[in-house]
Length: 189
Image 1: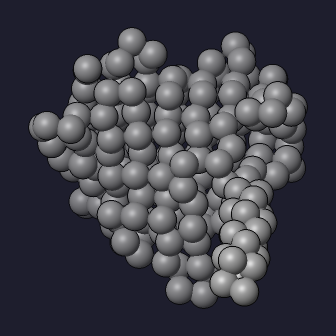
Image 2: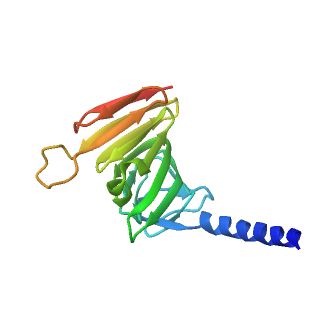
Image 3: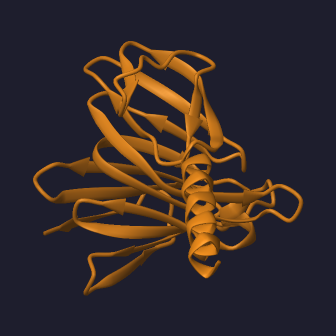
């Protein structure tokens, strides 16, 4: 009896895990050139993005990804990124968002997850990680283990009443904070 119960629970967990990995989390808003996912499926305007997807852009290609929490990623050419975690409750704006920029250039405009709790947005890069607070920033990740981050804004004196930009960048040992738009930092292995 107990053995049958454990087998039933195991099977249910297997189906639940599979359905979670196929969870819709965003859409390709704009696709220019050759954009594919880990299954080598071509992504075009309106293609769905799912939890766990890896997005690849080829030379002279770029895409804009719109996520359910209103985070916007503009992905430059020759870029590879993976959505490691995306949990979002639209009723409370609670969630967690982790992406891994393995190579290339990605511009981020943070959404509701970061606005509610900045600690719940993490961007991994070959040479470190960053967290962002209500802002717009650019990540350039080189496959040689070197990454640059540029804070685009907004600044503390913005007239729109927006939360001033703030990035916390870490290489695993050292941490630096960028608070002025136009400032950047680089991390290397």
